[in-house]
Length: 298
Image (cartoon, rainbow, N blue to C red):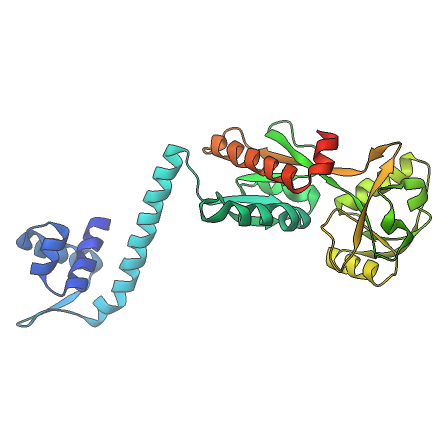
């Protein structure tokens, strides 16, 4: 079935007569009539009743009209996508990242980019699954917190503090930073072991030959912040603070605990240049949003 014939059918249905439709599609009326009959033959049923008052859709024609319109819309979208791909242009990129990265980095960047921004969708995944989703083709690029696979192009987008979050009346609230040896004397509210901030904390504590008391463990960052605000411990997170919490950087041997953010993409992606450009913009946005950590670690 040719799309051309479907367009003729929809035109006749829309304009109500062969005469008006022929002018709209720039096809002579006798030829247009023959094309409609050809389509009816291919379909095996009549689309119009030929009456003195003109062409009237049959019941079958009324049922088939939305199907034809949907096919034409899809064809137009496919054509537009093909032209976009051929040009290497993008207007609706999909990124896969951890939920915290989506909330604190991607979403603010999309909001700041305005209506012309290139990111149109985001997929949330656990840190260890981010690159797997990229490999499956679920996204155009990834923002990961683990070292990227060798076969991908990547750039460092910046670094995010792993904070100690405390209420304003907590003794740590007035400190510019907290050494990890002092931190582990506090009851800690930590994320589950799939969370990158927890992994970094546990690694740093182990390297320092220390241990800590777990006050609470959760898989929901908002709850961890709520627990900290309730005074039930010090939350260890990389998220932005809420509930009036104060954030205190954690230091280990004068180094600040932080998560490195990697922008990762397939070097063979049709829009690789555009992805690199978007990630460059995101890197600059991240540096402006968190200047202290990124200036200190760049």
